[in-house]
Length: 455
Image (cartoon, rainbow, N blue to C red; front, side, top):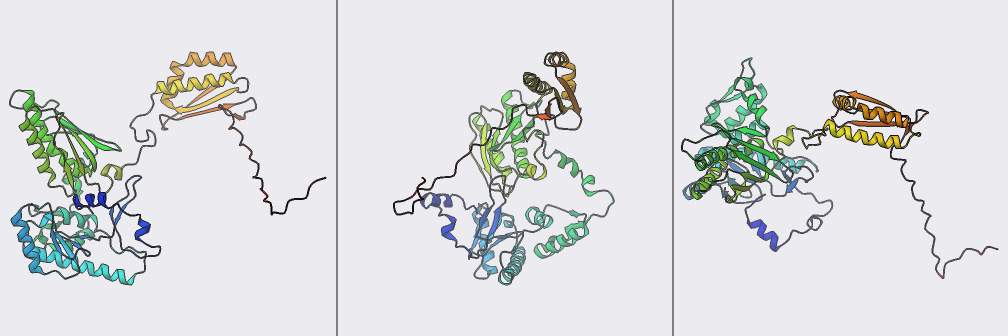
């Protein structure tokens, strides 16, 4: 669980001991998955349990009340602490006041406190009654979690088009935010909900590399293994005031807000490098920094932003809790292996001709060759390399058959060589024989019984 810079400094002074020195085999421990496995990285586990509500986070091991560091206003922090003291939470459990509670009244915090305490009682009973290993608590379903984390008082209506989900969400609102319970509605029209409000169009665009900005210009998002690179382009955008400096400044302001939005929508995490259009004015640089910082305040994930460089680059990090949206809804392409590129027909043709020359070199052992490949690559060979293949067949007394297959990988190349009897011949020879190793000889010590001498 991130606690700012203090844990890092402790780690530098006191390195973490190996886990086998902390736990013993067979010991029962309550743990919480705080970060899912991402690629080759294992999931992060913690013994500091936390259960999030709408306005509070229950932490059984904390045994005190704290206020989120994102609430920087001194008066707001003081007011929230006074409310929590009046609510008098039970001893033995702790609470952190979330940023969503900054403008909430005492009754709303009381409802959330009661909800979390009832939930913790259920979890505690499971811990006592159920034998380990067992799952004792799972995060709320997506609809409840979305309402809990994203609902604000300026949202007029929540539409739900599935009866069971509507009943569950209504119950959650009634318990946690009863004064907003009438804002949830059941969508009963025959027209699909996403189609009516054009959500499908936004979903279709959410993984595009290029995002067009409202008044012109665009941003390009590239995800790599090491980092996320975001490039800002001005395109045909021109500011009202003349000059490239003002155009760059206005595009960068719009792009900063859109970048913050895309990071949330796509759930991008790790190191992020934002390449803004170069600006000479120091005042313009600072305003772009402030705009990006302000736009990221809506983000629930922790972020850290560095100052803009002289090349117009802002480096930042964003908390990575789970794989990005792109990795959750897409599989790696079996043809390009995630690179986005496949070999051209010309490249495939060159490889085939090299293999044919090798097969001709091994004639007369090889008498025929069958090549299976993508239909477009086959057309390239039959049209562009016909004379070379015919000359090679005549010179080496070799029969070449090209089989074009539609719907296969553009890089498919199945090259089979046959002898006069129709048996397959390995083009690159048989694998080398395994080296024979004699069994180790026994060493006899002076007091061992030696084998009898042979006559």
